Length: 116
Image (tube, rainbow, N blue to C red; front, top):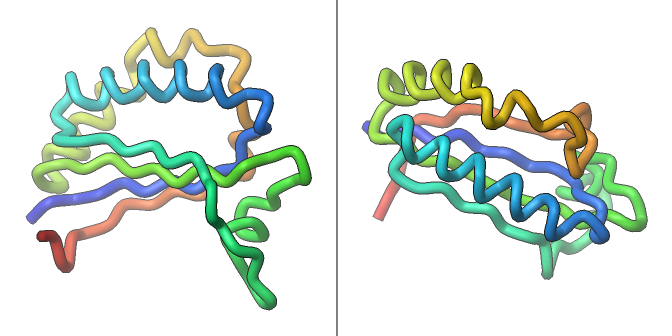
């Protein structure tokens, strides 16, 4: 059964190009290590909620945009092995000036229930 890693974060709007460059590099590395697809979505129509929302979940600041991303894997064992290699890849580890505040990033792994 396929497996998905999901990510939700806030990126300063001024850092869009820098984030996109980093995301392209990360996508290449994920795909080299077994991922089947990578998606990065730049928030365009993300409504504010009255109780909770994507904005409040990532503590979005006024100059930031919500980004929603996911990485698809064929199964969890492939994901587990692939993520170990991704996390050890020097191309990602050499990024010292992240274009967003990683402390506010939300992430998790998900077993697929429906996929069409």
